[in-house]
Amino acid sequence: MTSLRARFAAFVLRATGWTAVGEVPRTGILVGAPHTSNWDFVMMLLIMWRGGVSPRVLIKQEIFRGPLGWLLPRLGGIPLDRSNPGAVIRQLVAQARTGEPFLLILAAEGTRSKGEYWKSGFWRIARSTGLPISLAFVDGPTKTSGFGPTFKPTKDVVADMDLVREFYADKRGIHPERRTEPRLREELTAGEAS
Image (tube, rainbow, N blue to C red; front, side):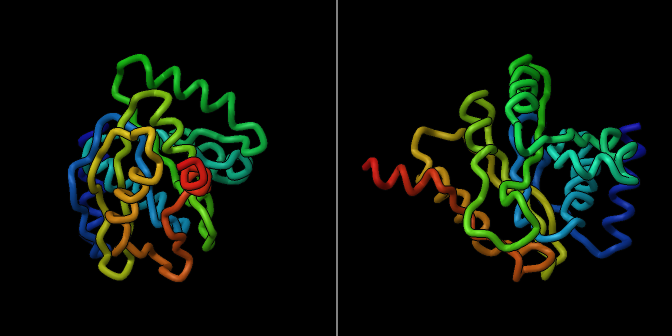
């Protein structure tokens, strides 16, 4: 099944003129950004399948009630109750600690619209599990999608986010006007504490 998915993904990427770059990580928290379109999920899925990886993806639970409800779990979708995300996160953290390959994709922007801050879940989950953070991107203007650096998060959220900002500085998403600058609210408190 994996090689069939990999061939299918490579064919679709070629046929649509997209280029995939970088090595697909096998374990960690994968940040998918900029998140500016519903197509971001499709692109991430294709480039992961091309690399032979089936990821887990947190998706708001409301989408599972619609016509995609039967398909999303088969594509790695995990329903997230945004009013009470703790139970799902605890379950995922337990899975991550088993030592088995574990790759969770998170759209750190949390929305396809332009916002003020990213959601910090990717950083907090990586810190609590000891998993590395891998950076993935979709860049519509260049029709390029893929993977960048992987790093272990530290206690210094500002330094960690400086690495993230450096990588995403030239990544614009499918709809560049909707891109949210990579920054976390936690950086404000970290700045006040220093």
